[in-house]
Image (tube, rainbow, N blue to C red; front, side, top):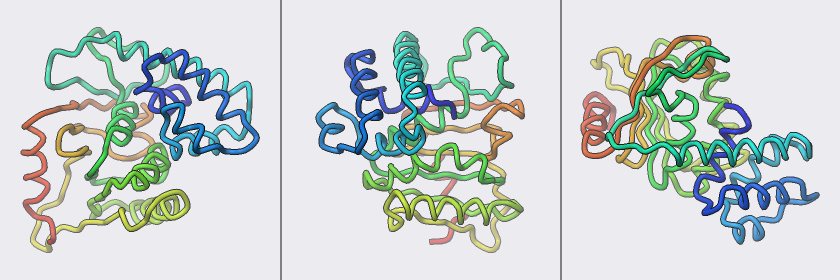
Length: 245
């Protein structure tokens, strides 16, 4: 996930993205964190802390990221979405977006995490730390907001255990570990080859991308959809079919 998308996720609810970017830049360049100032400016203070840790008071990087983040928000707002679904893709760096393609996989996953207010459910047959690290800080921030995160344990992924241990440590450092849960499939369940992230039972990513560095960053060519509405409940029913309770 690049700096512009991360900052854009913080600015996305600002009435004026440019003004918000200036306020965010000031908060990130301040010598000490000021959570009250972040709340007054309309930002989630936990997400601001995540950005402070990422940018390490690098003024030049902060200024550029805030400028690009505001442009990212403006670009998203200029897109009129009429369908209850969007095509999502992972493409190699520098590849032009085909006409009609508005979302990358990494952007979509970050959007789902940042917009969540109650629940997040994540299922993928393969998980590694380079992939989960893209959204680890945002997941930790979500647990602070009270979001319950449920990760379906992959049964054949050689890197999943290490990645989930790293994620648990990240949440312990910056979130509420009590809101993070690992779900398991029943013994007789088929191999869960589905790749799904569900936010608040109202929006979901379904696609080919695993939660891996190759799947999210564009090393692989991946294709999926972001869906909204009643169809998301069907996705959750499928997730519930073989899960331990």
